[in-house]
Image 1 (cartoon, rainbow, N blue to C red):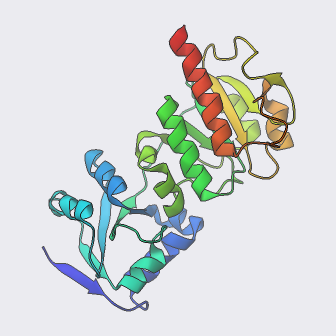
Image 2 (image 1 turned 90 degrees about the vertical axis):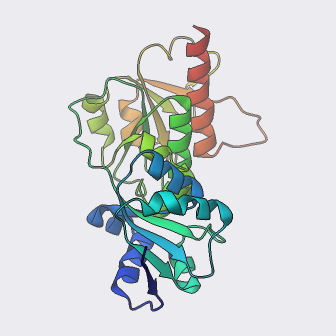
Length: 265
């Protein structure tokens, strides 16, 4: 296996990877993203995710990453060794594993409608929250993720890292407005709204049939447009000393309460 060294930030491949690391628009335009870490690489191999390139750090990789090289070498992707400073410049985390993949994004044909459970993200800005939300949804059994145009890119390197491989088990549809959700998502539209509505735990029946859980942005919560199409508003009863929950934590509470109820039934 030939390892191609890259030591200059003027290198065309490095410039491309830097754009993928820094820009959600570049991820969308190129149809590719960066996946850093052992778990993401392992999941990509297990799910036969198309790999465009294998990127290694010049100072070496940890033992877990080393164990994956044989599997990665069976593929056709070229291997590159980046100067450690360059590697760190595109890594979504500090002190990473020293192993990164450039992977192709899946091409999904958007169906006319989704008749299954959905997690709808309305203006969520933080890529870490996006990834955690996707990971939480998949863990709870909800594999359809729909995001508004105001959300950060769901496939950015930081979102992918936070998702820890859950992206590869989900169907992700971006740039869907709240108004479009009405026709696209057939489930009951439930707004997680800290400002009011019905008590999540005391309200019966909302978990029956497909649901569309709507989660809002970190600062403002759900937009007026999203609230206007919601069929039911539910809040999580929390202690008065705390104003609200992080959107990822709120989603975990709602989605796993849904899972708990259905398992009991």
